[in-house]
Amino acid sequence: MVGYGAREVTFESGGSTIAAVFYRPNRPGRHPCVVMAHGFSGTMDWILPDFAAVFAAAGFAVLTFDYRHFGASEGQPRQLVDSQRQLTDIRSALTHVRSRDDVDADRVALWGTSLGGSHVIVVAAEDPRLAAVVANVPALDMYRGLRGRYRPPHHPGPARSALAAGRLMGPALLDAARGRLGVSPHYLPVYGPLGHAAFSDPALAGLFRQVEQGSPRWRNAFTPRFLFHAPRYRAGTVERIRSPLLVTLARDDSEVSSAFVLQKIGRAQHPEIRIYPVGHFDMYHGAVRDEVARDHRDFLLRHLMPLTAR
Image (cartoon, rainbow, N blue to C red; front, side, top):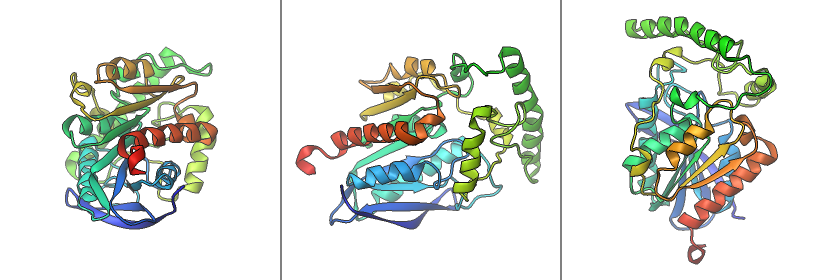
């Protein structure tokens, strides 16, 4: 275990100031660093601190940040989910840590979860300098990647699910039109009733109540125009990744098709894949989260801090 400190920092991305937290081990020298990319609607005061603490205690510097339009970062309108801007923010975060005197620019890893897991796959395919990549329950494709998802016993069924998805299109069209006109967005809840929110599983109600209470920067709102620009997996992406790659999946993932991810990730060069017998959001809490975080840490140690460097 290594002592560490954490302090707020900022960097620039796309003309906006990005709010971040930098975790630094309490020992001299240049440190290997992990840049962490959040998922859909996530802010850096939710989920990321638990994983960052495990990595920092192992001797890594860690950077967490809020994407533009979210949390403490700049960007108008608020709660705008824009994958291309988020990809730019991740690249800017990498540039920031590689420029720091206390970071070893040759030992920088990229970690992403859910939507952020998709983002890090894209960035890793274009950035061979990365020393390692971790993609946790990555949402590689928000359309084809939904087919074959786990269906829990209380799932509403294909007909109701299709009707609910159709109900989201009207608000998405309205929000997209408002965006083109440059007026305030038409928001939908991240969590709410079926057909009126991004997530509607009744089993998640308690979780999202905890998020609202424990993560003050998080907001239960998003711009549904995202549905027209959600990530689509491009053939050949994982094949271009040259960095060591770990992908961790939830066997019973009702948000992302683990079978689809396995099919695509299997085309990468020697990926490591771990599957846990839980659901998507279980990967972020309790004993399962602790196990996943340890597996991520051990992978990062192997590739960023060989035994001779510890």
